[in-house]
Image 1 (cartoon, rainbow, N blue to C red):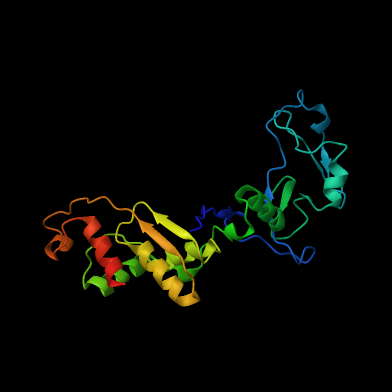
Image 2 (image 1 turned 30 degrees about the horizontal axis):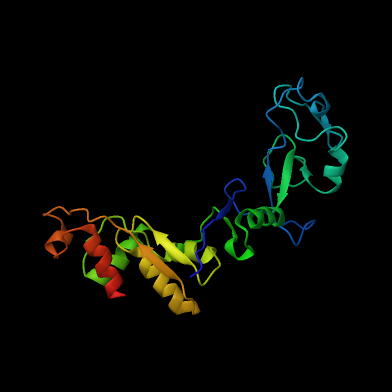
Length: 234
């Protein structure tokens, strides 16, 4: 059995997806800090005012946190599209130059770190509406058990979304706080949908339920009992 370490690369562009602009139609990108935590005394060659070649506007450097590029390397970085100025795009909300990181670069770094191209899929921190909300998790529980026997369950559609990010239909998914067993249901449903052979391990301590809880009255003594019941029901 091949074990997969689940690594999810979360990319963030001011809370939105990476833009795909006309000048780089085949590669999305995000912005990153163009300064370093070094002073002008430590890196004098990086202590210079950066001038936008298009507008001629000069941006002053911070003597306590100088630029990540030097006078000698600025032009090369700029020619490669790695430096973005505030006036380059109408949608930008920045006041100083920034460093452009292409999605392809992020992917290559992730592949190098994980050792497998299949182990990584770049995604945005902005989740799609299809992943559902808390009330959807409640509906999942009610449909399986006939009542709300578990508080704040995650919607299985959300877990399916995260599992699908792994991009490996043979992966082994570990949930060490299994709760109501949402992960187990998500794995089984996803396998049924795309013909995958994913496996799961669900770990849940036999935490006792309150005797006045709906779950206890329904015959479940511990949270682990609910976990097992959901797996069996699927």
